[in-house]
Amino acid sequence: MMKTVYLIRHGEVPLEFQGRYIGVTDPPLSTTGQQMCAYLKALECTVVFSSPLQRALQTATYIRGRINIDDRLAEIDFGEWENLTFQEISARADAGLLALWAETPEKMRFPGGEAVSAFYARVDDFFDALTRSAHAVTAVVTHGGVLMRIISRIRNIPPLRQIETLPPRGTLVKLIYKQEKWHEA
Image (cartoon, rainbow, N blue to C red; front, side, top):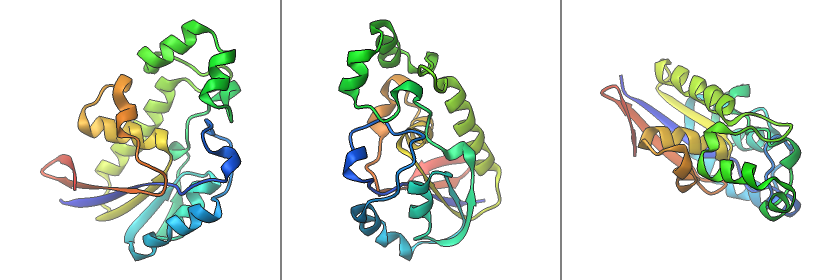
């Protein structure tokens, strides 16, 4: 069975949240974010899956199809690092923890937040279920971290390098599932 999946990163957020790790922080789309998602009105999907966070849900409303909220699509919880810039995190964080994040991210837990391994497990669980589903055309509206995990799995890129797969906000990556394998279209 052939399937099409559109992986969509939510639109732009207000300026005060840009350049910050906003995981579970829940800002809405900015006016720019709303405008950048207008092209999604052309998509018609059997089903639309969305993160429960409002920036993703607002993006999902532009797509024609039944929206299903799935908590597994929420961004990672950065804990004490929520809503901070990298410079602010670097000034506060233990050097060892920063090194762990840079070198073996899958082994770390954000202080007061989520373990990266738990985040990967829930994203993998969602994507494995999507692979088994019977939906012919699906949209998945979510966040940068979730998309990096999914795309890096498809490309066989290790966690250390998954930042290379980060799509810009408001963009779409098309996947095709055929012959028991995912392909980027």
